[in-house]
Image (cartoon, rainbow, N blue to C red; front, side, top):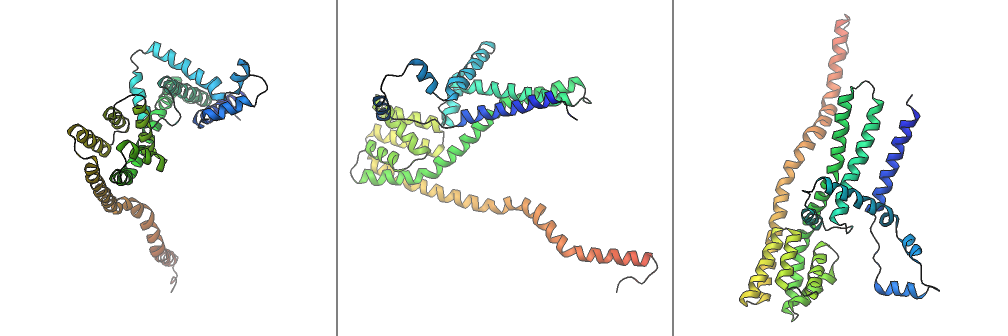
Amino acid sequence: MLPLLPVLLILGLFVGVALIAVSLLRSRRSTSLEDRLEQFGTLERPPTLEEIELSQPFSERVVIPLLEGLANLATRLSPRVDMQAIQHQLDLAGNPYRWRPVQFLGFRFLTALLLGGLGVMVLALARTVPLPERMMMAGGIAGCGYYLPSLWLRSRTRRRRGEVIRSLPDALDLLTISVEAGLGFDAAIARVAQKWNNELSKEFSRVLQEMQLGKLRRTALRNMADRVQVPEVSTFIAAIVQAEELGVSIARVLRIQADEMRRRRRQRAEELARQAPIKMLPAIAFLIFPAIFIVLLGPAVLRVMTLDIGIGLGGPGLP
C-alpha cells in the first residue's frame, strides 16, 4: 500500500505539468485592429486596468511571467547563455507560439524542475534503492527534462524544413508564371504569400513586411535564407540577388530555378523509392517472417512432438 501524501504530490505535479503544457502550447488568437476597435466601441465605458489584466489568458498572466523569472535567474547563474542562438533556433522552427528566447529558456528550466521533482517523489517510494543512486537518477530525469524542449524544437525544425522543400517547386512555378505575365517580383512574392498557407508562404510574407519597413530586397531575402537554412532556398535566393546586382532578367532566372527544383524533387522521390526496400527489411525480418514460420512450421512441430511423446510412452504414436 503506497503512502497517500507522495501519491497526491505526484498527481498534483502531473496536473500542473498538463495545465502548463496546455496553456503554453495553445495557439494565441490574433485579433485585427478593426476587431479590437469594434469591441472597444461596443463597451459602455472604457475597461479598467484590472479588467484588461483579467481579460488576458492564464498563460500570459501567470505562466509566462513565471518562465521569465526562471530564465532571468538562470541567466544570472549562467551568463554564458546566448540569447541570440536561442532566437535563431526558434526562427528555424518557425516559432509557432511567438516565444521570446527568455521564455523558452524559462520553459526548459521549468520542465527540468518539474520532472526532477517528479523523479524525486517517485524514487522516494523505492526504498530498496540506495540514496546516492536515487539522487543520481533524479538528476538524470531533471537533465532529460531540460533537454526535452530542445529535442521538440529540433523536430519542429526538421518538419518545417521538409515542408519548405516540398512547397518550393510549386512556389517557384507560380513566381515564374506571375513574373512572365507582367507582375513585378515583389508582387509575385505577394501572390505566393496569398495563395498558400504554409511555412514558405509565411516566410515570403515576412520578407514583404521587412521590405515595407525599409530593408533592401536582398537583405530581406538573405534573412529569409538564414531563418530557413535549406540549401535549395539558399541557392534560389543567391541566384535572385546575383541577377538583381548584374541586371539579368529575373524571369529567366526564375525559369531556370523552377526547372532545377522540379528536377531535384524528382530525384528525391527516386531516392525515397530506392530506400523503401531497405526500410522494409526490419519489419519483414522481425514481424512477417516469424508469423509465416509459425503458420507453416507450427503444425509440423506439434505433430513431431506428439509422435515423440507417443514413442516415449511405448505406444505407436499418431498415424
